[in-house]
Image (cartoon, rainbow, N blue to C red; front, side):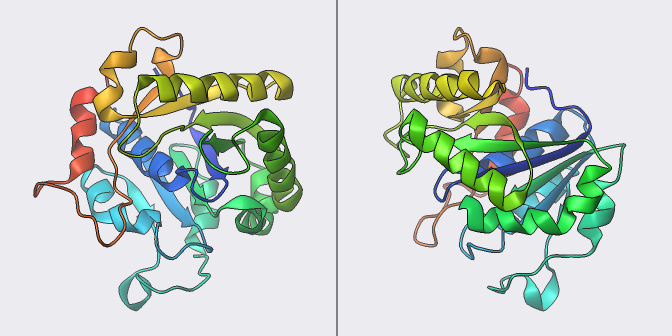
Length: 243
């Protein structure tokens, strides 16, 4: 069972790690359990894969989504909304921040340094062992160092999210977990969650990391791909949240 105490969870990682998908699905899962959740778009780097794409689905689950509205919804602009600071300071809910990729995207966190200093936070790094720069232990450690130097925050946990898109199988997930476990041991931090395609969740329920599985329903699809069906895909989380 993934357990995130009420407070601030910031999700970062390198480009293509799947951090936005992790942030969106984590928010949906916690909301489906009855948690009060706020998800904020802190990604000022990537105009194509932002959590605002899943805003309607998340809001239907009761998640408060802080994103640019009206004429700025699809704007490719580095917009940081002022209400984010207030949301970080709330103690009665889980705040999830979807941070931009690499050290460049993590710089935005410096603008919240004062408020984060007064509020408990956890900075999670998403590791996809099949992406450049995080396919080795040394690569992951180097990426961590760069993100910490840029954000001026310490990474306190890992979100393992190794996949090969539609070619992912259970062995791919296991490989990614082993790499993440090596990094976690060196840094002395926990693996907080292991993201897996929802279709693989039951196959992995006997693994040592089964209590940390985050079933993923893909929401961040490129424009040329659309989800099948007419209903909000991530609502399936309700049925698979408890394995």
